[in-house]
Length: 457
Ligand SMILES: *Cc1c(COP(=O)(O)O)cnc(C)c1O
Image (tube, rainbow, N blue to C red; front, side):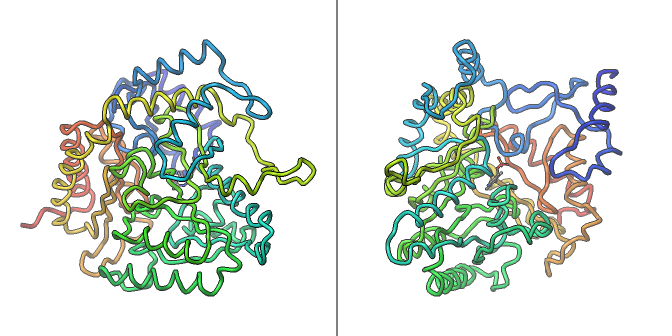
């Protein structure tokens, strides 16, 4: 009790929390997490909560997973950090080999950084510099990018420039570089008919129009494959990603797959690109790479890209980019242990029945009067709450309906975080069937408590 009070006071005095209206935070009595075990978080009072967001989409096999704990401890006893600038280190080398082995084919080079935004930033910079060093006709004019409506790629200026969620980027617009925006099917601001399959077809058509007209100025296209995360867990219709790949190849545009959120099993496959057998030119990985333990990211690319950076020193074709903690041995050791668990526990194979169970349970939400849409891919779920089910009229922002639902679930031992009025469930892959049933029940009841809606049957 006293401990919590003390921490709360200091937190309010000195901390500035991410993506948080601090005036609201100052009025709250926050949950302060002290320990974790398996899929649960435990606060300073000893109260247990299911980690329904995987600690912001990162945790994979649960907290305090023995193999990952041991791997980090073992690495600490060897060395915690040495630089990759002019030196090698063993865990970063071992991990690179493993990543190349499991990644979509053609991706053979690994560039490390510390988070998703930088993984994206690096892909953008590499794609841009690639064209400047290709020295073929017109390659210097390829200075722009194509991104999608509803895209989220991180919070640094480069990644914001290819992002498209207004509340996140609007204020910085004068500082962002111009980017072509194509339509992501069924995304929240899609002006094209949202019906299936016309939306997909219309979006592809618009996408091709952009490429056809501007391909000489476009360096690369960046996409969140299969699921757009921050937009509200928007699942793209089958075949969309494949078409994007086909058109990028046709117009000689590099494809960047931002799998920061979708990577490492979330969608039911190790990488979302596998759903449509799409090999990207760049693969951005972060969040789940260390099993949710440490900040580590990787940008994978092809030999073709890599070769354009080779030359005499004085030609300055070097990729002049590198974060101080690049290839951190502790992070890499955790990532290796994470990947070993996937293999040993057959994590991906074991997901199937969990995903099927979850799909079945989610059917029940569709009858709720304020549920406008239920989206799922693998263990990623978005439940969109609306004022009017028929017209899809949203709730007012100030009603804070999504937020209130997530406050309610906490009373029942479940921590989740909404995206606007979309309730997100994104549990660790190690979730049990019992917990799936329990947390879906809690979410369902909490939605009813907050929106006053009852099952109509
Ligand atoms: C979270 C996220 C990022 C940014 O990652 P950070 O580690 O927060 O910088 C980028 N892209 C996608 C798709 C994400 O979900």
